[in-house]
Image (cartoon, rainbow, N blue to C red; front, side, top):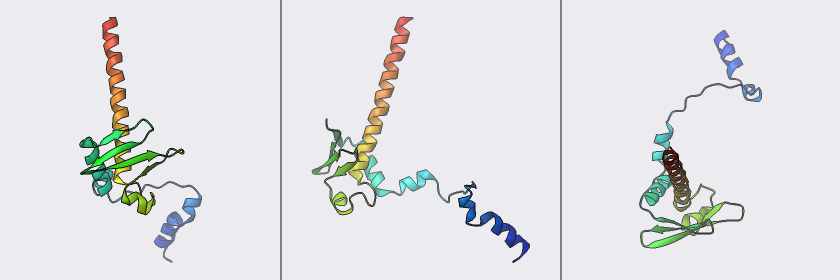
Length: 130
């Protein structure tokens, strides 16, 4: 083994993980590009943008997809399930379906909008108090 190879082995050997050593590794892609290549996520964003997600009181939602409706339900443990064929086939083993993703995105959007509304009301009250 050459001196350079021995030096490299010392720093790249498997025990580095056991020692909890950190090293920077640059990934070959950026997160935005990876996200844009995910067809279920793209479809979920399109459903949210089209206003296809209608929340229900039980924490689930109805998602209008073209000429039919998929029902997303919240289980007792908080996980979401769907009535679509993807969910019936994979049960979340290959990730959530576009309907479950859309419900999650809509909830995040709604929460962000609610927070913005509260901030605007508080700002208006602060201005009125002056």
